[in-house]
View 1 (cartoon, rainbow, N blue to C red):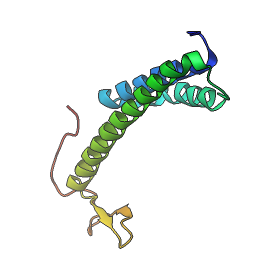
View 2: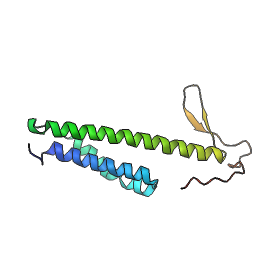
View 3: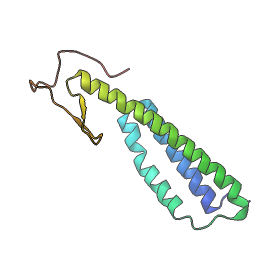
View 4: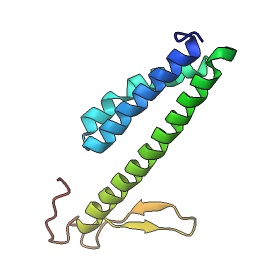
Length: 125
């Protein structure tokens, strides 16, 4: 097995970029999260250029792909939780989400246009 084959290196870079995304999501820092974008885009582009996998690398490639899928699942879970937290904070401040028949959500301004219900909530930990 050639440990430095293009497929193995590309997938290792993808997993490193996904780990950084996960760290950015968990930290709650938009700066940290945005800093991962360029690395993730480059890693995805590198993976997209893989045209074949050497027979000796297949087990490693499959393991790396499974790891990537698992990290993506965790990123999705953390991202959804973060989105719900933001929705809750916006709702408390007078900007609830309103859903139409298709299930699409939009932000609704309060009737008085104030953007606040007189409730102070910190959305920071």
